Image (cartoon, rainbow, N blue to C red; front, side):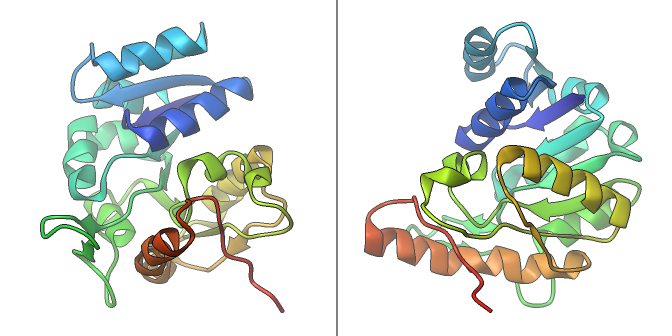
Length: 214
C-alpha cells in the first residue's frame, strides 16, 4: 500500500519506518520538498521510502497519517490540499497540546470538542480515525516494549475506515484494538494525555501504557 506520513519528528519517523518494514511504500511529507530530517529518514529506510511536501505525501498515499504537532496540524493538512485528502483514511495521531506557558502543557481544545473533530469538520470528505495518540511513539509500533497485555484505542465516524486502521494496528502488533465509537471519542483520547504526561514524570520513562481490566 502507498502511505503518506505528515511530519518529520519522532512520531512520523517511527510510523514511517514501521510501515516500510512491513512492506508498504511511504512518502514522508513536510513543508518543503527537501527537508533535511525527511532526507535522513529516506536514506536510512531504502527504496520504499521517499519524501516530498505535505501535498506530495497526501497525493501519494492511499492511507494518510497525521503525525504533526497538534498546534500545526490544521495548517499542515490545509497545505496538503483538500482534494488530496478526499475519500482517504486519515489517521490522526496528533494531540492538542499547548506548551506556550511551559510544562505541564494545557489543551487548546477539550471537553465539548477535539482536534480530531476539528480536522474532520475542516475536511468533511476525508475519513478521520483517531488512534495511537495515547502512548509513546516507540510503543505505537512495538507493543512488546511493555510486558503483558495493554490497549490501544481508536474512534471514527466511518466503519470501513476504522476496519482498515484496525488492520494496520494489528500489523503493528496490537491484538485487540478498542473501538470507542464515533469521532467524539477523540475528546477522551486526547484528554488522556494530561494524565500520561504526569505519569511519565512519575516513572521517569515513556515506556508504559493503559490496560482496561474487566
